Image (cartoon, rainbow, N blue to C red; front, side, top):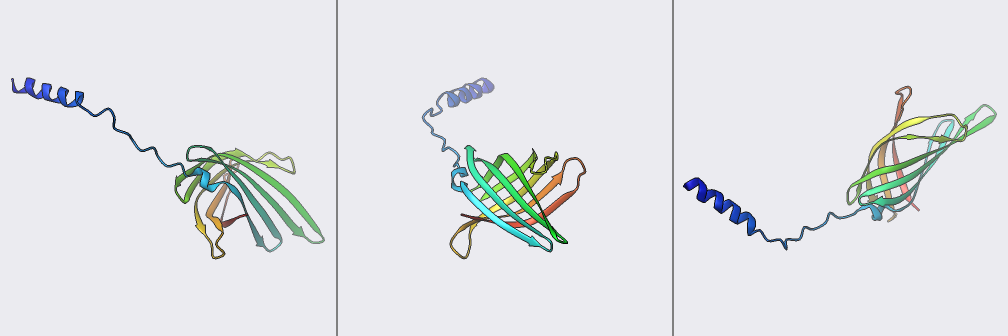
Length: 158
């Protein structure tokens, strides 16, 4: 008898639940990242100009058109390679944080095929000049060889 009364109480409690309870939707941080960000790296014999065109394509999801223009200087000559990465599944994990983890086919000016995994966690800050920038340690891994490069970059908003 006690079990029957207990079961009835459970059913009644479930039936009396407030149906007007409103759940607060998760905040969409993606639009705050929209814009063009640039950075330049210089190492002996090589200059790389990089640009991110960031747009939001879903709630808390970004698309980044990542263009890397690299000039390599050798004795008496300069070789230029332009690479384009089309990232479509970049997650915003907080108000000022993004996460990249995506394998893409890289379009190259030398027409050679290249597939790379792009990984990193970026943080958006306001720099000393009062401009937005995204700081990220970006890891690029060649899908065919497994060779990886990793570098810390500061993309400044234009």
